[in-house]
Image (cartoon, rainbow over all chains, first blue to last red; front, side):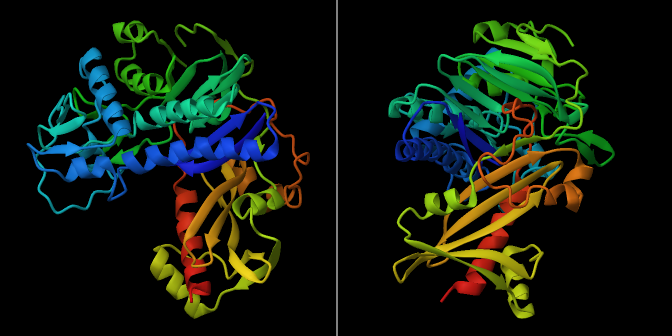
Length: 276
Length: 178
């Protein structure tokens, strides 16, 4: 299996292709895969001034915005999982991430305070997005999963049969071969703790062990419980297996917050959750 | 640990003293990949002056880190197509070698990770440990951690790569922009 890697979406994205392609075809396949990742990065980056996410964040309440079809799909899925998880998954907590120094936001615009369970937008049937409340969104908890799915779909379209796309631990496997995936040991992240076998499935993991730190006498991390506004500070790793990586990625946040592998949300999306 | 459907425990919870390592591209592969039209490549170290380092720090908002840098010029016949600059950065416990291709006008063309190695922080920061990889760019040169290719876990940020790319971009602008 040949591998390539590039820095995107704030992490290292790796594409591995097992098909026996001649060199120029293989390079084209990587190009197709990384182009898909780049596209999602550019549309959904919190940091870029031109991204759809920034346009939504800078828009005033009541605005109706045209967004790219990819951004629309991610926002729509984010709302669906928000509803199914009774608010546990929520992309509208970025104000707290800015306040805690995880994300930069330098607009002079006044922001109202963060509110529990706030949902600040709705998707309209014509593909547009309406900003319904003040607040900042960040798709960091779902866009990597979507980027993986999109890259996989482009690879399939190109004619690739067997591949893995891994965006910083959120990954999806296609092909006839089962692939072993190792999950980090949260207590010793440079070691592995578990092995999962995947075949035509996606797996994502979340944990606070890399992002945990102190802020104003409290322990914080980049994982937020949107029902309380408190950070998830845990020594566990939360993994979800699903058909699509967008679901696996987003559902790891539901699992990290509720800590319950039997939450009905996982069945609803045909996903399996486990805590290590 | 609670319910693990298809998860198997790794005995001993740690692969003792091993590193996760992946070699993605050799130097030669990276050159041809980023500049497929180039007919020849010329390697020439870049030595920065103090004044240039000051300018770079101003543009990049981060320290220049080194006076000398490995630069390869890509040519098609006599025509300069662009530049390639190599660098390596150390994160929490990973050593990442990467290459940035720049157009002749110094704008970024492509960023590629050449190798990624994880180990205990001590080893990464130990120059002798790092030296063992120098010159081992051939595809068959490294086999550490071969069975551990696919890792899942909390997302490891690549801020140090992003900062590195910004630094290289500033270096190339200051040194080569006409």
